[in-house]
Image 1: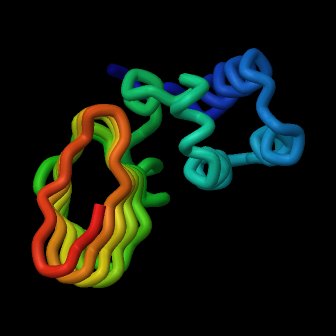
Image 2 (image 1 turned 180 degrees about the vertical axis):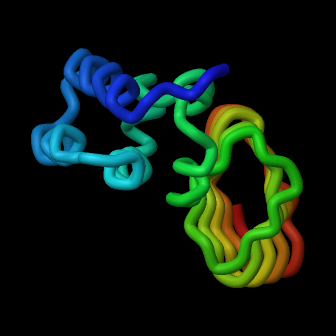
Length: 151
């Protein structure tokens, strides 16, 4: 899918947020954004609302240039990521997270967590947890727990 320009993406995102009655303070941040980084930081800060209200989906994210997603630690269709001490959103991706990383796994993502990392799994995602890591599971997600990990 071809990426949209910032201007075109933002215009459609504004329409979608209005349709879903986005809260005023965050919507003002969307309106005030002047570049990809500013807009993507607002989206990431509100990712759960965005996904639940379908203003962000795999298809919509595919319209954002990949470098803009990666710049704010949102990963789409990435395989075998190795991430350390990060707070990330994974969409249809696989990753190993180490050293106190935090991740939300969306849309069939898979992660292995080490060293006190934390994950929230949604929409058929899976995780294997090691070394005191924790996970919260939603919507048919699964976790394998090792070494004092919890789910």
